[in-house]
Amino acid sequence: MNKKGKIIRVAGPLIQAVELTGVKMYEVVNVGRQGLIGEVIEIQGDVVSIQVYEETGGIAPGEPVSASGSPLTVELGPGLIQSIYDGIQRPLEKVRETTGDYILRGVRANGLSREKKWDFKPTCANGTEVGEFSELGTVKESEAVVSKIMVPPGFAGKVSGLKAGSFLVTDEICKVGDKPVQMMFKWPVRTPLPYTKKIQSSEPLVTGTRVIDSFFPIAKGGTGCIPGPFGSGKTVVLHQLAKWADADVVVYVGCGERGNEMTDVLTEFPELIDPRSGRPLLERTVLIANTSNMPVAAREASIYTGITIAEYFRNQGMDVAVMADSTSRWAEALREMSGRLEEMPGEEGYPAYLTSRIAGFYERSGVAEVANPPRRGSVSVVGAVSPPGGDLSDPVVQATLRMVKVFWSLESSLAYQRHFPAINWLNSYSLYIDEIADYYEKHNMKEFPELRKKALKILQEESDLQEIVRLVGVESISEEDRLILETAKILREDFLHQHAFDAEDSYSAVSKQFRMLGIIMLFHDRAEKAIKKGASIKQIIDIPCKEKIARMKIMKESELGEVEKILKEDFASLGGVAEGTV
Image (tube, one colour):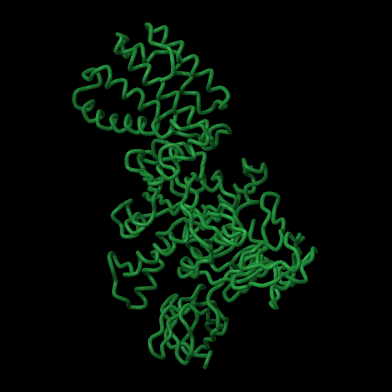
């Protein structure tokens, strides 16, 4: 079996070589005299097609190609948290020490440091019978994350030689059966990490963003997508989710995005304080930076690298949120490579297998049970999609919508009005409402789904009324319809709109959202009763408690009871509206 060959054709990131007999699909190869990293993507007879993850300028036919014998893998173990990688898990800080501010071709760097020692504390006794992903001990990766050191996949037997101490990731910490175990192991990125079974999602991934948590929630282990045109705020929303999502670990993948957007992440996250731990947000984050000026083929690898790292933390029993920004750039990379391979194009030039690739990525999400005794973890995936001109009929958007269960529709007109987040409440949807209903029962918020329905109904009625108002004027419609316009305005401006940089409003707890929405719906119901008893819409619009309602989002949750009390008193003074709960 010959593992060395030679290049016969160079077409951008696509290299074709011959004489590589015995090479396998998705095997990693070293290309040219500089040893550029590539991956086999097609084998036709003696001709092997390779996508190269680095710039191929200067590579010529006749140069050597050698196969590594293994697929593209990532290193999983202590040291992932707070790391900043490129698409093939080269730590950018380490690369910078070697090459300076620009990544030179052919540079190699281990995904996990071989110099740093970690304090290992055993949680398993020698002689214990263990299987894959059983816990052997723990390592404190950061102040916010304590990682489990697990039995590598495929290992089983009795533990021997386990002891506490300070170890490198490559040191032997024990034996399982007759196999030595290190703190790290390698895993191919295109293969999902094994688990015992998948479980139905039952609680929301709390984001602190009201339009999401109250109206269009995503479950832990769920999937969502944010399509929208340029400038509508996809990246800003993803940043907000990464900052505040109720996850133990956040994996942020910048796939083909502009370098300045990744710079924002790198500068903001160390300064932001995590509301869960009180520590810098970076202490529970893994960043993968594969910006638009990096080689196109590495975009596909970055997506798989990110989801594999997320599965590793999921198997430790953690809740992980993956932010992919954006999957459109990944699909464009697939289209470019498909074109260079001269494959039959599908819709708009994308390859025929686009849908299956997108499905394969999103299906790696979910709540999973692993090991014995079992522990549960989850991987939630939110992907931004950037269709040309904001066209939602784009094949990437349509393929994504068929797979995900939450759709947050961004609208550039809302973004231009400085309405944050610019999520359109009429077009968006979530299919997790019924799955997470028990969560509201457990947390004394059983009325939440009903309040949500009422609020969305009012917003929909407002949209219908706007057409009539444009034709005949607001004075020509009934008092009840004008009340709907007024309540919808309160919902839009005082509930759905958030100040991302306000200390109190940037993150809104679900319990506070419930109280706020309840007070707004109480306002609407009391106003409806008052109008039936003869009150005018002008009296409703001028009622003093409206100012308090407008300020609820910047109030503390403990102050909302006073707002409700003032509201009831104000309506009672309008003419005998009955007291009691609505």
